[in-house]
Image (cartoon, protein in one colour):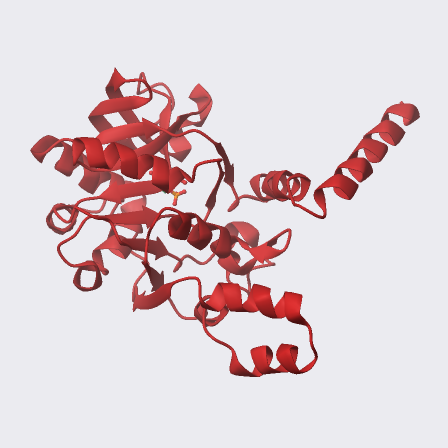
Length: 293
Ligand code: G1P
């Protein structure tokens, strides 16, 4: 079963980033030289996905425009001979086909996935959350697709988090069946600290089977009064089984101010032309700070 579509929910209000996100969608905030949403789309494209389904809300049209063809801009750059910039702009508009589905009410991540049912159809698909940036040699989604190919059941990406942070994530309890792969025994959304023995947290990457839509139909509002994808996944687990995969790579919570800064520094250091000078600047900065002590 080939996985060709990726659902990317972008309907959230981005309140953690106010006032920056009052007018600009949080997914359009720049990390080094591209908006965070472009990292997400480039990761799924590099993993073999050919269609992105954006789950949008009002005020998010800049995201669709970003991946669209801009006749005016491309003609202007061509006319002025700015060929490097033209290449960059063309790269984005030719990256992938993007379709949009509206989430008319903010009823939670599970609901955002549910509204894509007609567009996704009867095939397995990826869900990638825009807040989670993963820097990895082999794209995280590609790594997960290998696990999906083997087990043919839904796969969620996980990483270990400190015990006092489990209440920020979907948490997976399970048994390791091969290195880094867990058969899931239970999933719970944002459990209170001390109520679960596991610290394996779901980060925003999922390979889902189409049966998830029936599970979502039967999912009642959970924590925060929202339809939680984690709760629907726990139904799917009982009915078919699901797997968790400890991906290889560095994950950044770009939806949080500190996480966003860490992501910026990480991607700046590894940037082909900016990396060297930026690292020298950081070294100088730290040296001067040490000298002051
Ligand atoms: C969502 C999911 C949660 C997951 C997290 C990863 O939560 O509901 O299970 O662990 O993304 O970033 P949110 O951060 O939207 O509250």
